[in-house]
Length: 406
Ligand SMILES: C[S@@+](CC[C@H](N)C(=O)[O-])C[C@H]1O[C@@H](n2cnc3c(N)ncnc32)[C@H](O)[C@@H]1O
Image (cartoon, rainbow, N blue to C red; front, top):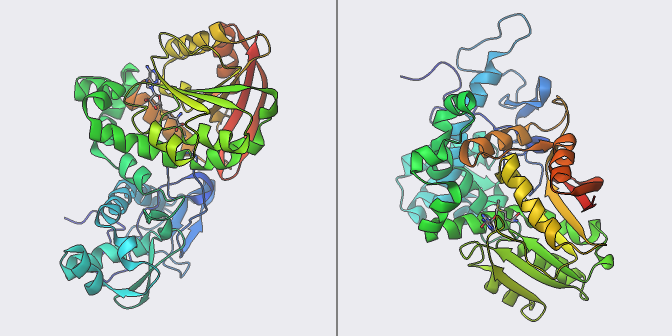
């Protein structure tokens, strides 16, 4: 049975949900950027993007407004967002964007190269056109849009790994239990998988490698901005705690050639770091140290970076990580936290993505996104004090929280 409203028909033009994201992005989870509101969409109240088929008069498959200003299409389209995400996933897995490249291709041509049936491929391509990844130039002929090109895994700054990670069943299974998670405050991941998120990655090296790659991609925007957005000239050695494959620290070290670096992470987290350092010619200036940030932070740095680390953890554990950084911080040293900083109350004009990230942290890790007051409290409990909070600026939704010993 076709649910009321918005189901795409082969050859039809029914609207397809576009997940809400920062500045109209396709709901990508973190700090990469690029506006990508699909063509033929409009901004409705509270910033939600809805399809209008390019006509201004949306056909929501029989769902009409209630006449009181409420528009049911918004909810219908939002709930179709999970299918939009799986449509992106299929496109990434079949390398549809790479197969079309910078040409106009028929669905049959793409299908032949993808090993798919033409009648299935045209339906996938039309669904992708409905969410702005491709455009149907003439019936059955498709080209990649500028937004869609960000799915091209060969292109610098692409988000293909990120799309695959955020649409992966491992990431989504806990979400089936969101109501229970909200009731209990306990992450669902551990119950569903019988281990916690990072324990699961430890046991699944291929998933761990995909996670590291997705993190590396999502760190791209921060890596492009941070080296010049923060004054690194005050420091000699930067430790990136939970620094993963070293993408962020490499960008800093390349810009500031007088600095040395330490990437600190678990053995699994560090698996791709030597290759990153090698690629950037940084093996002499940067070491990789395997360790556990719940046990210690590495000695010898005067700046400790924590990007997208604290939001993974509940308060007690976040304070433990900060306390270990505090324990090795020299008198003039600093901790630099890069995270979303939520406003005290939801700003209807601001991107809603951070709140979905907050729920994702709750579902999968028991972590949370935080307000300035929350960070003040965490830092205070760790013997630290916030010096400044500076937004990194578009397209990066994170802020730089500079912290010193209290
Ligand atoms: C969300 S990722 C962030 C990676 C990187 N900072 C970035 O923003 O791209 C969290 C990182 O914390 C690392 N991690 C998790 N548990 C850890 C632990 N107990 N000790 C050290 N690192 C850990 C993971 O391996 C992963 O690299």
